[in-house]
Amino acid sequence: MPYVKVAICGAAGGIGQPLSLLMKTNPLVTELALFDIVNTPGVAADLSHINTPAKVTGYKGNDELAQALAGSYMVIIPAGVPRKPGMTRDDLFNINAGIVKSLAVGIATHCPKALICIISNPVNSTVPIVAEVLKQHNVFDPRKLFGVTTLDIVRANTFISGAKNVSVQGTEVPVIGGHSGVTIVPILSATPSYSEEEVKALTQRIQYGGDEVVKAKDGAGSATLSMAFAGARFANSLLDATVAKKSGVKECTFVKSDVVPGVEYFSSVVEFGPEGVHKIFPIPSLNAYEKTLFDACIPELKTNIQKGIDFVKNA
Ligand code: NAI
Image 1 (tube, protein in one colour):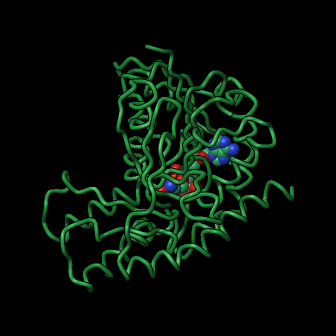
Image 2 (image 1 turned 90 degrees about the vertical axis):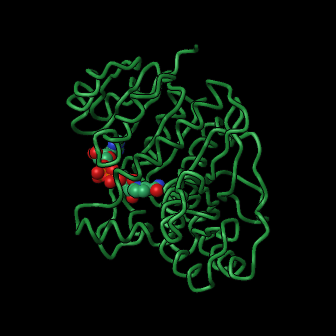
């Protein structure tokens, strides 16, 4: 087996800690490098006592970023501030754009061939930010950059199966578009029959499921545990395809895409291959309601993408 170093940037945070725990349990991971600006020595010491193969290393502060990233096969980024009640994901842009940009410079310099999984919000803008930084360093490989939208699929599967009391294990709902509000487009026509009212209510819940958690946490942040689960599912799928060479592994993810003309990044079903993205599937056929969702998604998504591109180009 190859040496597989997975770096997690923001590893001491609400998502970072449980995500690091879950990645420590993947036997394909040889080294787990935990980077944050605070608290990583403690998190690393704690996880290092778990008897799974991954060797855990901790790096704290920007002076140690180079060491954390050097030789990484995969970098997962949940660094940045989460939402508080009343905030949209776009409200996080001003702080998180700069954090993600500086981490992208680190990746371009110290592990330019790494698979990069972006969790930090707003994903619709942070993915283009990372792409632009990598382009500036001439190391952009669109097969290796992913916005993690898996929580939307995880939520959709849970809400859909819960509504009809069917097994959640056999439920897999595609969610396309982007990762915020109206840009989240669940394709519920792919699942068993629901009434029009049910579909509208479920769609609204999937699009704004994050708000339920933000409200319930009452100022203490947004989804962390379910996000860690979703992030690990995504990263494990990617490792299954690229390291274990499994074929036919698919996830919905936000990638550079030409599925929708004029929209540079889009989330749809992607099959992974040895280098990352192998095949991007076209949008499934949409019913009339899904078409209205799609039409609402596109202008907002384009604005979010352009905001990310401009942040790097106009710096
Ligand atoms: P948190 O505040 O608990 O943790 C963030 C961590 O990032 C902190 O430990 C902080 O020290 C660290 N950090 C800040 N600047 C950094 C830097 N320059 N380098 C490395 N680490 C740095 O926040 P939480 O709840 O873990 O959320 C993290 C991000 O994930 C937020 O942007 C949130 O909106 C996003 N998120 C994304 C979801 C998705 O579906 N893609 C779902 C839920 C949250």
